[in-house]
Image 1 (cartoon, one colour):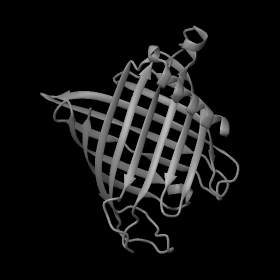
Image 2 (cartoon, rainbow, N blue to C red):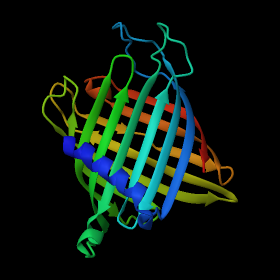
Image 3 (tube, rainbow, N blue to C red):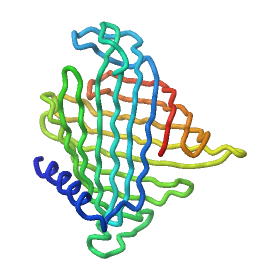
Image 4 (cartoon, one colour):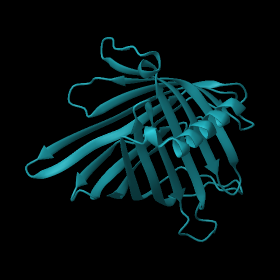
Length: 252
């Protein structure tokens, strides 16, 4: 697993010292979300009824001739004081880097709906008052040509969760999509992801999806709603979450 850390560090260093591979595109967004009725458990071991969350998300997507990267960080409830009614002050971040195998081998790896094949490496970070862990993922990713969508990606990844309950390894399958459309003079987008994670150690299989419907009021400001469904949240069997979240987005 140390090789994955070295791979990310090497890639970051290469980007810093080689201006010839400057990003072909880079988009950064900040989202503020608010929702309630999350399935949380306090550190003391009791269940929190109807917990509310405020979430601030920073995300960046960048692309180069050799591949692309996507990073985001969710900061949850840092605006609240610690008490027995809230689970506060947690951070979850993910960074995935993809290398285009067609560029590497100077070959068109197109077949059927597949229009791009990538090697992928990902790191997930979780930090709160009781948890400090990094999850390592690596595998293949595919860009698929789906009519009507701006993009549709499939990641097929080997996954190693370093928590004590996750003995062994698992697999993660991720779908990522976006579609922009217009209703009258208004511009909207339907976007999101779906993760399916197989069993790992004592952790049950998980399914997490967060589709978003966004009205783009201006080129920079978006207003919308995100729906979150999480089956077996954190790998805890029988802990399911289903809720909407109001969202404001700033893109620059």
